[in-house]
Amino acid sequence: MATPDLTRLPPERGTWLEIDTRAQSLRIREGGEVVAEFPVSTGVAGTGQQEGSGQTPLGWHYVRAAIGAGQPPGTVFRGRRPTGERFSPALAAAHPGRDWILTRILWLCGLERGHNRGGDVDSQRRYIYLHGTPSDEPMGEPRSHGCVRLRDADLLAVFDAAAPGTPVWLHD
Image (cartoon, rainbow, N blue to C red; front, side):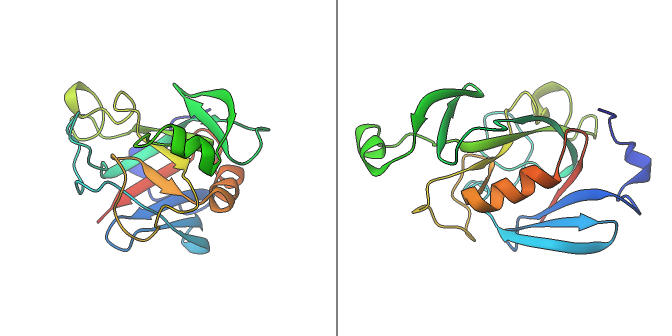
């Protein structure tokens, strides 16, 4: 995996992801062309870089790790590992208030020192992910704790398009 060169972003060619926190959408791009678009849910506390803020970070990132390949949709993750559970209404009722991380994880790493990388603004150390969420959670409105939530089917498409090293631009 090669870390993207910040001076060459956005890329003229190749796959990259654009997450628009204002529009609550994720676009898969090939160079300048949008090839797919999906609704998302970002941080209910808005945007920002600070550790512990519950906000979705802005700026250029890249996919540091792609976790969960081969797991069935609805797989529950804790600590980036499958728990052996599959999400269900009964499981949700048994664990009210749990922040469900389902199906796949794309773990982001910031590219901008002092903005989203290093110190108390480090997106990777904040465990900022793109991940699946229960189907009854609304999309198109901020509801997460800082991560970017997607429907399982949408996340699978993004996961297939975005290998480790894929640039990701989060903006408002």
